[in-house]
Length: 493
Ligand SMILES: *Cc1c(COP(=O)(O)O)cnc(C)c1O
Image 1: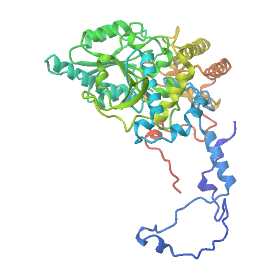
Image 2: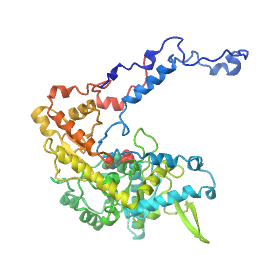
Image 3: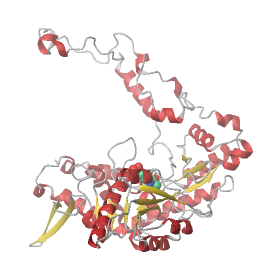
Image 4: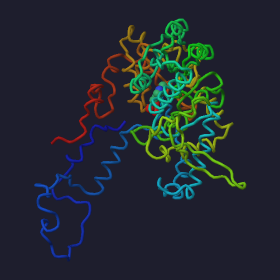
């Protein structure tokens, strides 16, 4: 691998007077700056800009871009995140000026095509979940969680009022394997969280759940398949228990890639869920760009969804699409305009091009790829609860650490030297030294084989070489917390 640490900062490459472009001499008489800009608004000194030739600038940014890891350049088995290929046809289809040229304040009559796309997308998502009420508004999975919890509270309050009882449900039950966004969303919604234990096979401990259900419980948030990559076999019983206690069941839909087109959350008892479209439905992922996390809810909860929703009516055989704001029980707005429309249009293209059979095959191949990789590695590294998996599995480096001093972090860091993105590490918290591996359906058998070979090679490497890996990146092991919380992103020279 190239020695990438040799890339200097652009400021270090700067040479006084070097230029990328030369302009012809100006024939306009020069005016004092103070005549153009009020003197009190002029900076005291000119900005310190780097001075370089154009080829050096291009080369600098190309080299920087090549330091990046992305689904386009690397296998990216980041468990729970579903880093699948983004089909380019989606980008091409949505790039038509007929869509990109629209303005959110245009009259409805002039945006019928766009509204039709959003309406049909609501219907497709409802069909996939078996939950009829869809809101496309939330801006990410976590925002979907918050929105759905607010919808749940509005419903429970309304129900208590109808039944002439005080509303006292403010507890959210969350399994110990849950993603951190679940308790965070509950807290933002003003609710209390109580943890529910998993049993030794990785399923929700039903006795523990029973002991924590009471008339204060608003919602049980469950991830299914769970974060160990296994399908919660008691899901129906769990939903029944929560419903008997008067609560609602929320599905964290981050793992929908393992079940979409095969089974429907609404059919196994779920009341509401979110979709991570950047995971399951291949929209671009990461870098904090516009996200989207639609939610779906059961019929009883639909009137509480945020506004606007897209509705349609038929008149003289013609369909008219419109935005519905008139919803007295709605929780109100959660997002400006109509959601992340550019992202939702990509979801629509993805689902329309796959169709019902395509979605099913997507899911089957995601599960097949994960099981193939699991079979290739499980004789070399422990995989608790790893007989079979859904679309991902969680290996544990606990034994490797005890016997050879090799931690999950060592394995993850060393993978970078081989040109692989690392799996998710140290999540879920219920597995010691966790390595959560999700290949997705868009990877070939050859890639999975090469990754498995690398993993086995790393596990059999001496611990010393691993402790200071990676060896091929500009910096090796930053302090993880400081690097995330206090990043130094500007040149101090
Ligand atoms: C990704 C993820 C989330 C949060 O989704 P965002 O779209 O990133 O906000 C929630 N739960 C699980 C299990 C996830 O993997």
